[in-house]
Length: 157
Image (cartoon, rainbow, N blue to C red):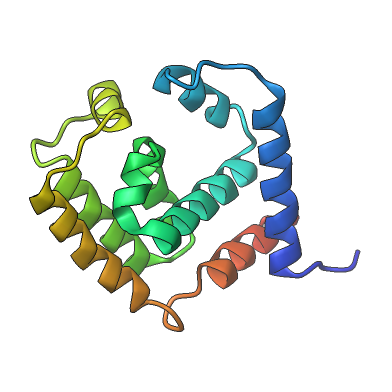
């Protein structure tokens, strides 16, 4: 079987994840339902969906957008996935952003409920901007498409 490119593989998995999430109805005001539906994706689809959404958010509006758009409920999972694909520098930066928005160290459901409706202070926005700068500096150093694609290719997709 001919191996497809990383970009094609990621695109197919992301499209599949998007189609599945669009096909189910859930309350957009409920982190629980949204989180559950994302959790129903295959492992590969979930990995791709989370990394793509995180990267899109941070690239377009920084970590402030990532948390305002509620994708921050997945920050712990994203950190895990980034470490799994050996994107250690990216994982450290996302972890740094998590420390900014969750200084008390809330866990599990308490964290998700808190961050789903988060209102960031000016101080937090300034701290997140520092994480944005670090993330931007990874361009050309740690390529998420290559790392994710290579990881998925090794799973025999």
